[in-house]
Amino acid sequence: MNPAPVKRAVSIEVLEQLDIRAGTIRSVEEVPGSRKLVRLAVDFGDHARTVLSPGCSRTPDAGRLPRWLSWEKACGRHRPW
Image (tube, rainbow, N blue to C red; front, side, top):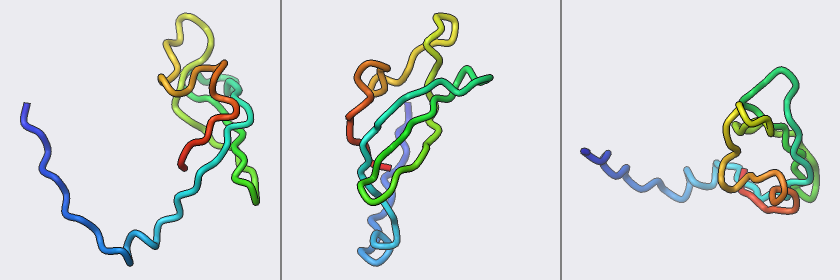
């Protein structure tokens, strides 16, 4: 395996252009007709947003949710977006 080279550091001006927020997941729902997406209701404090995230359905043939996104533990968790 040949690891990728480390990218050069960015300036603070470039970093300030990014909008990264921490949000609280309020609910996780399956997306009808999709086996690979879940719909998250995310609260950012001053506004709420619906976010589609790659994950999996609860059905056994659809696979697994990401480690951080178990159905029982996702609500109330804080994540960067």
